Length: 634
Image 1 (cartoon, rainbow, N blue to C red):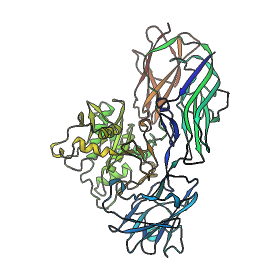
Image 2 (cartoon, helix red, strand yellow):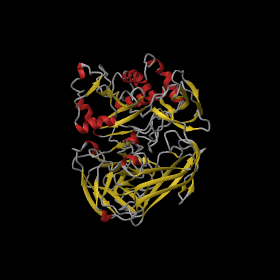
Image 3 (cartoon, rainbow, N blue to C red):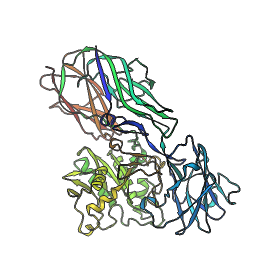
Image 4 (spheres, rainbow, N blue to C red):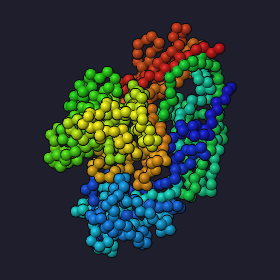
């Protein structure tokens, strides 16, 4: 009998515990402070307007379960037809007045943060009435939908209200784009550990079975706050609903639910001013060892899989419009001469930029296309619609996905680019497809430091540190664009950046921002990076300072080894993170690649103690390989 023990009690160990509504630091894991209350997600365009003028008023209601905030900021998406126009905002009967400023910070072009006295607010229903002063005309945006029915309009100065027939031409029924930020903790959120191999007492797991499991937390729970621990498990190295158990509350001593387990901690607080705190988690399990490992790992390139709690919706290989995009625009021909995936991205990005002969022109039908590459390409081939950086990045993302390459759309200050996954460099790389407005040069590029391409986060960090000396724009900009493509100028755009969490818009348009770039960003589905230099915006709810949330594993396989009852045989279990995964392939030191299952026996002989594994997607594109070399114990 042996014992497995693992402890989480520091920023480095807590870094592998993921959760959307929690933050970790040297002091432990707590509920995130700063709550954005919203009844819409910003899935609308700039013509979905409500007018506030004269006797026509707008009212937005928020329901707040618990109110104990140090600050409150109302965040309406406003516009006004004149500088110095005035607007009354009446909070639960308490009036205040704001004035429109034409000279506004970039990120507050339409978002208008208004400090609200917390004394004027209460638990339950809170009403905010918008009333124009004089003959100024103000507008709000509307997202259509029938629930939760907390927006209303009055045409008689507030005497009567209706929650339908809203907006210009009385054509809308939905929620005004008004959000409320409260300086208080989330009421509840959870964090989840990575999958844990209970048999991994050494680098090669023992042959045996887990027995009694104990899971405890060292925690602080101020009055009105709680922490509940759960556990689940199975025989596969990551959660599989067909194999794993459901979450169960942790008991004092309980049988382990499988070889691989996860724990989850639910943090709750009835008092928003306080949060429970997890200072440490300790896991122990009794292991019935039937055979100790006869081998140990001598060398390996076998990194753990990092997974983000923010799931990304990839275009699926069987997406009909994705297939049509690839065939109609002959994308395989575009990348045919490329020898590596990174080279394929270079070919593709220049081809994408080359589809526009008159970018940034609204076209003959005066139309801003949504994030749909087949539609964008068809319209631009006839010079019918607008083409700007948003559309270049969209086409790049979706054409890449249609070829089985991994790309996402990345947004920053007044610009939209891509991040591509390069297996050749084993990292994400920021690529600017639409940064050159000159249709004669059509310059596309990326950044490199000492020959290594940079991600968006690395570009942002270079801007934060003002560390530009070794950064180059690749390829070198044409002479005609040198003044606009200086490293410091272009990196300044990375002062703040976020990613879109999907590239499958060929399947469905929503959710999203249909006319992204025509007005200030307002879709609340982007994931923003935050740090000391870029504090969160109160009108957006998804922020992270955890790099794994943005940069989880891609096209990567993890090898798990376990001793069998036979001396010279190891059991191999594989785990993978790959969009459109198809199968695994393996090879020995001198063998060709052959298809293999996710579980197989590895017979080790004196001549070959090394095994290499890679995953392959349904397009036939292999991911990065992982390998281990073992040697006999002793």
